[in-house]
Image (cartoon, rainbow, N blue to C red; front, side, top):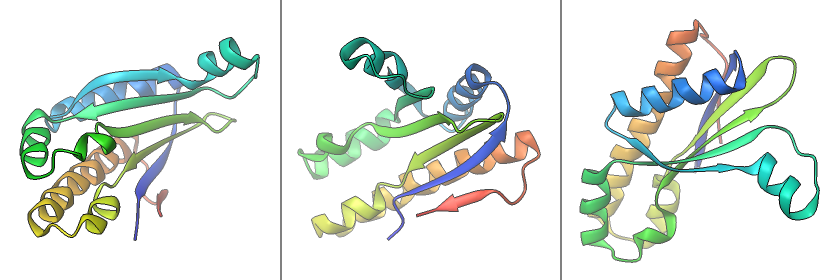
Amino acid sequence: MQYYSSTILQDDFDSVIQKVSETLKAIGFGVLTTINVKATLKEKINDDFKPYMILGACNPHFASRGLRMEDKLGIILPCNVVVIDQGEGNIEVAAMHPLGIVKAMNNPELTALAAEVSANMEKMIHELRSQSGVSSQQYIR
């Protein structure tokens, strides 16, 4: 079962974060949280890690529907999108597919909702790829 999809963009790290935020907004998701992994690892354990940002994306309508179906769903909310500097100008954007996790809950209504959210995350990746002129670099796991 796939648990994420991603694409590689040739751009500046901060510009990609801005593009991801704007693209998420265009499909009805907002960024609730940001975690700067590089800064956190440096501060906490003096580890020099590559630029890596976790964006916690949420669509309140999907969240409300899902939480009413399963109140423990917050364990996997918000939907994480990561922006990773892979070097040489390659910035990877990877978005979770909640369907893979939710299927294990054996709730058909929730599974259908997770499929809808996964489709939106895939749409966001597709939009980023289209905006950047990237046609074939996509990874699904």
